[in-house]
Figure 1 (cartoon, rainbow, N blue to C red):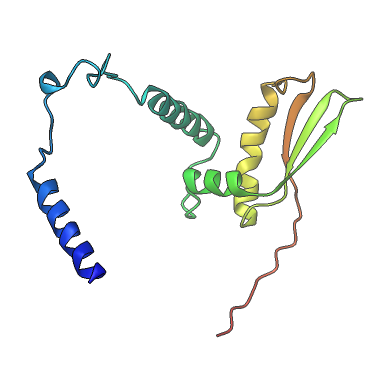
Figure 2 (figure 1 turned 30 degrees about the vertical axis):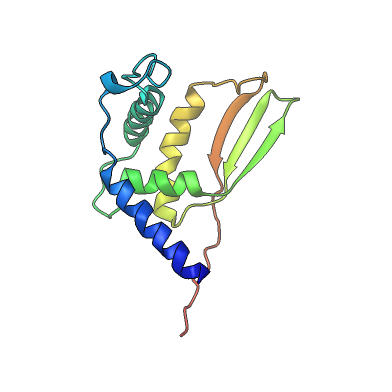
Length: 150
């Protein structure tokens, strides 16, 4: 009996929900329910972040030579940003060394070498420290090919 009465109540609530307006004009709202201001640019931070990221990718892509071997700059940058790295502070030398531990292939390693040279030429001081950021890619990483057996 209880399940039947609950099902009937659910059916009645569904019918009442269908009668409710989907869009409510602001003029019909009471004073306490009216929004004080309408935010026109809610996503300004997100949009500005996207623009900065787009410009950064464009700047970084300029360091990659035009190649016909399928090494597209965005693909290399994606693998670079997902790669493991060692962060080695050297306060006695005033350096914060970031050594990327290797990209998917040797061609990608060679491609990012120009990018790292450009980054190192900026002499960037890591925020909150007096350490100059020095980036490099670990050369000579032995790549082992994994075999997939099913």
